[in-house]
Length: 417
Image (cartoon, rainbow, N blue to C red; front, side, top):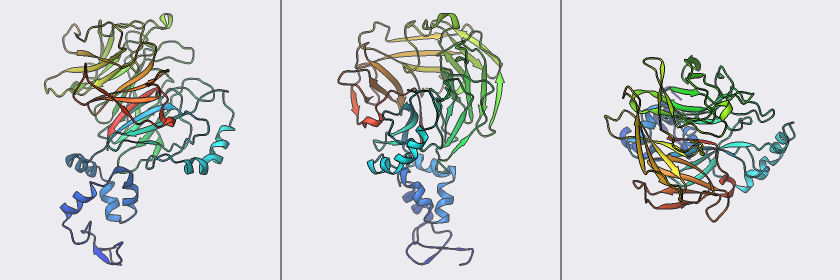
C-alpha cells in the first residue's frame, strides 16, 4: 500500500484525504463530530486519518461549534460497595459482568495493608448530555479527600493532594487525566512542594491551577500557596496568604486571572468559619483581603458554594451560588468589594429542597445548579438538578442515580468534551 493510500473498512483503498469515502471533507467532519464521546476510542482504531483528526484539539472545537460537545461532571466520591471495582472504564457504563470479571484483581488490591475501615475513593463521571454514569479507570488508589479540578482548554482533569489511604497523612500527589479526544490516559504530575489536605484549589487561565491553605500532617492550618502549570508540569511557589485557612474553598476571578480563597478556619478555631476571603493578584504578586463574604460561621463553604460563569463582558470578579437549606434565614443576594474596588464577589443563594438535617453537596454544571442529597429521607442518595435559567424558586428535578454512584462526593469539576 502506498503512502498516499489507506485501507478502507469496506474492503477497498481510499486517498488519505477522504475521511469518509465519497464525501467532501467538510461533510465527513460534520458526521464524525456527531459521534458520542464514548465511541471515540473505537473511531480511532478504524483509520489512521480518523485517529489523527480525533486526537487533534481542533476536533473538540469543531464539536463545540456544532453543539455536539458533551457536558461531564467529575466527582471524587467514596465507593459505596467494597466489592465494586475501582477500574471500570470511562468509555462504558457500569455492568454486573464487568464487576465479576474484575472481582479477583480488586480482591488482591484489598489484601494490601491499609488502615481498617478506610474507604476507597474513585472518580465518577456523570454525562449530563446523555444522562449516563461511568467510573474512570485509575491504575492506583487515589488519595482520600483529593481535590478535583478541570482545565477546559487543555482538556485535562487533575486530582491533587488529599490523604494517603494507607497512612491517612496529607500527600503532595498530583494525577493528570487527559480528558480530551487525544487520550483519556492517566499520568502522575509533578508533586506539590508541600503536602496538604482540605485546601483551596481552582483552575485559573488555560493551563494553571492554584492551591492554597488546607492543613498539614499535624492538622495545622496552612497559609502557603503555589501554582501548577499542567503543560510545563512544574510548580511555582507564590507568596503566602495573610492567614492560615483550613477547609477553605477556591475559585477563579473571571477574566482578571485572580485566585480567590473563601473562608476556612485557623488551627485554634476549628469549625468556626471565617467570614472573609483572600484574593491573589498575579500582576502584583500579592494577596488582598475581602471582608464579610461568607456569612455562615457554622457552615463550611465546601460543597455549599459553586462558581457561576458570568456572561457580562465587563464583570470583574467572581459570582458564586451559595446553597442553603430550605429553613435557613439569609439574604437572597449580597455583593462585596475589596478596599481598592478591584475585586468584586457576588453571592446569590439557592434554596435546597431539603431541611438542615440532610447532608448535601452542591455544584454547578452547564449553567444549572446541581445537588447530591444524602443523610436520610426520600431525597437521600440521589442527584437533583435545577432547571436551566431558574435560580431562586426554580424547580428541582431528579437525576437518575445508580446506587453505586449515590455517595456524597468530596470534590468535583465540570468539563465539556
